[in-house]
Length: 165
Image (tube, rainbow, N blue to C red):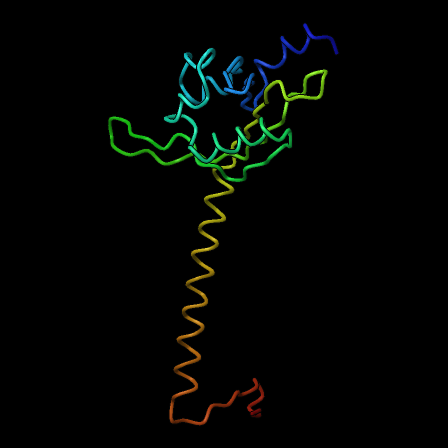
């Protein structure tokens, strides 16, 4: 695939993509998906560290580590876009973010590529599942305390009326 084909495809991909260059991580490219997601057109040319209202500080730290070490990093369920609108606080959207170093010919790291795929529904389902698991454990512990401290004899009856202990 030629460079011109990639330049034509990258802006239209459904995954959010950004490219940063230099040790200071200057944002050089933001595709249409990321631009629409963030609702901002002013990111190209800015330093990643100047955009803390967009990226969480932890993500900036991971970006700097990838730039320093040249090792890719994946951030799972990274919250982005928590903010406020005219109706009050907005819920965060969650993204799996891959940070890939962009190596120069001499082996140094020229910059990095950021790929973000939204996983908000999966993360919310995981959070609900965690809450339900904790509630199940709490109820199970309560039932155990009740059955183990009750001054009764417990037994199980089979459908045919027989008992087992």
